[in-house]
Image 1 (cartoon, rainbow, N blue to C red):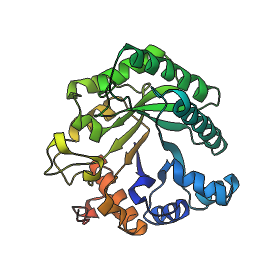
Image 2: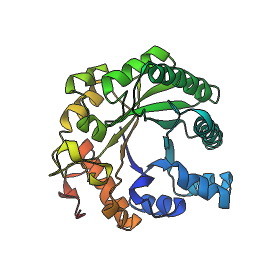
Image 3: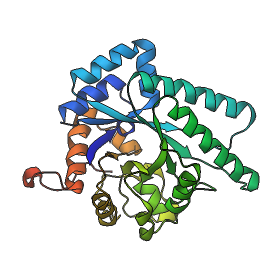
Image 4: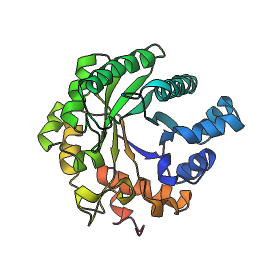
Length: 282
């Protein structure tokens, strides 16, 4: 497993600052936030992004996230897919192999929406495959369809493409109707990416992304996830993903050190001298 930090954890900083400061905290793997990357490339170049990552010995295996692809219609659909294809070309140039795609199906849910979702996933697999990339479908707890691991795995299996797999966001797993038994559906071939966070003192029904905290600081059980990842010999990224506005105020260098230490401890990869707790108050 590769301990990874998502750039969304430091939303207000720049792409370059994240790379420099996270690397200073001994983070070796970065989950790209696509908007930050696009802004950097627009003002610099793809080559500059490549040099920056290489200079700081930082790998960027995955990028997040693309929404609006599954059930949007008309002009909104055209815009979402146009953006998606441009992003795929950028990721191909930078050898970022996996892109996270949101399962963001909205109400009202009908058969047409379900059929549109399935068709869109087939198209996503084709577009990523022709560029030698992969798409990781992230089921979301509030989605009208595909709000749990079991359904997400079934959707991916229906497409049957090596270019489409699962992004398991443990926060959405915890909030939604997924069950621990569903973890048995994960395999080394269908699990492309993992994101983790924690939650404390907030009922699941009212929890939002802004309530995310450091893994190990809250009430969410991580042991079933880690047991399954080890059972399938998962070798991909386990990314810390926090959209907490209070954490966004923490300087990226400080966050990088604390975040990667917290993540490694949860994954069982930290030394005994790391101590305990994240020391970030939320």
